[in-house]
Structure formats: structure tokens, C-alpha cells
Length: 321
Image 1 (tube, helix red, strand yellow):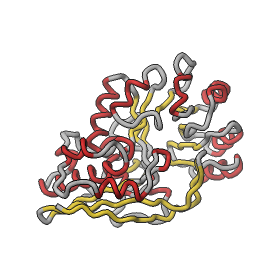
Image 2: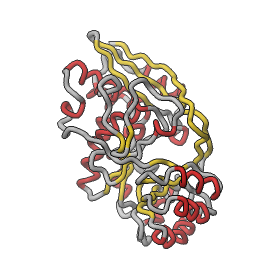
Image 3: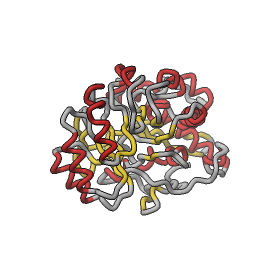
């Protein structure tokens, strides 16, 4: 077997800003696994928040034996971007070799489209209202916040999209005091969920705090080993393939989180359709889905995912799975 890694850059349709910074392009790693004349594909997005770089993730992948199996992979690399890309490429390879879709190999029901959030970039209240007005036809908007001055932004988004369901992502940008002050207004403005309001290292403050809007763990939840630390703090977990280290662990986290009573939110980094495709399988029946990466791009993979009023559709075999 051969494992090849290439760097790909996709231009964004517009500048994308969160509380940690802005970007104009998505830099991803594409993994190509070939064995017995069959090729599988995967993609990951190295994330600086988790001390990942393109170079460090490439090095992790290069450390793998050429004949690595998906089962062995779980113990050879930690949860993260490197394992994700290889894991998803191996799933794709297995599906093509077997002549069956990944969902069938994994024992999952046949997937259908899922409504996905569309993310509004952090900006001035005026710019965020403009974004909201342009996307007011969408049923679910995800609003990037995470500053001490977020109320005017949220008011502006609600004014721009009065009928859309809204979820809020603070990206660890609030303090406990800011969150407590905002919570009643989140209810007033019809916010359905707030994602990672406090830094992961400071989220113990959520224990015993009134949570009138469900709170979701993102940076605080990576894989199954994260679950014990979430108790009493969160109501929902955000499952991302680049955090779990691939579809294999993500499916196990999904079942474990459900068993412990957590709601499920399936999210993504900003990547191409190849990165979103495996996550569509995870998103079936989730409380919330945010797989809008391709909608934020100015360019995408050949045979991209299809998005329409029904949501994001499962991938065609030419793309993945």
C-alpha cells in the first residue's frame, strides 16, 4: 500500500472571521491510499488551536507503516487531523474494494440529506445584519461571536433573519460573567444553542450555572476520553472528524455520547466536500448539523456535495464512500 499526502488550498468566497482571527483560504491536506489497484481518499484540516500545522500533520502521516490497517491506525496516531485523513481514506478504500458504501460497511442506515447550518462570520453589527439578510432564507444560521460586545451583533442578526433558527458559537471567547449576562438575551432572541461559551480550561464554571439555552462542548470534546470531563457542564457535544481522528472514533463517540444523554451536534472545520462527506453519515438524526464548509468556499472538489433546500446530501461514490 502507498500513502500519499498533498497540500491543497481552496479560496474562500469571503473573509471568514472568528474570535481567534480571520482567513481568506482553507489549507488542507489530502491523503491518497492505494492498495491492490484501489484508491481511497481523505482530507483533514490541521488546526493551530490544537497545536497542529501542515508540517506536523504531514510528519505524523509519514510515520505510519505502508501497510497500516484502519484498526491498527487507532493506536498508532492520537486523535487529530492526521489520523482523520488516513482513517477516512481507509474507509473509502474499504468501500471501493468491497463494492459497498461506507454506511453499509459500518452497519448504518442508508443516509439522506440533513439540514445544515450556514455560518455567519464575526464582524460589525452592520456587516452581520447584511450577512443575515442575504441568508435569511436558510432554516439554520450559526452566528460567530466571542467578544465582550456581542449583544449588538446578535440583535442585528436576529433583525436580519427573523425566521431562521439561530445557534451561537462563542469559540471560547466569553467569561462566565459575560455568559451569565447574555443568557437571558439568548432566550429572548430565540437562540437554540450556545457552543463553547468559555475556554476549555475554564469550563468548570459551567457546573451549577443556570443554562436556559442548551450549551454545547466543542473545544472541550475531542473523543470518548473527553466525556467524563463534560459531566454537569454541557448538554450537547460537537463531534468533528478532525478532533476525533476520523470516522472510526467518531462513530464510537456518537454512541457513547448518546448513551450518556448528550444531544449531538456534528460540525466541521473549513474544508472541502471531501472533508464533509464522512461527516454526513454521522449527522443523520443529529440535533444540529454544521457541514457548511463547501458553502464558504469559492472553489471545491470535482463531484462536490450537493446542497439544496433539503440540506446537505450524501456524497456520490466519485467523491467518497
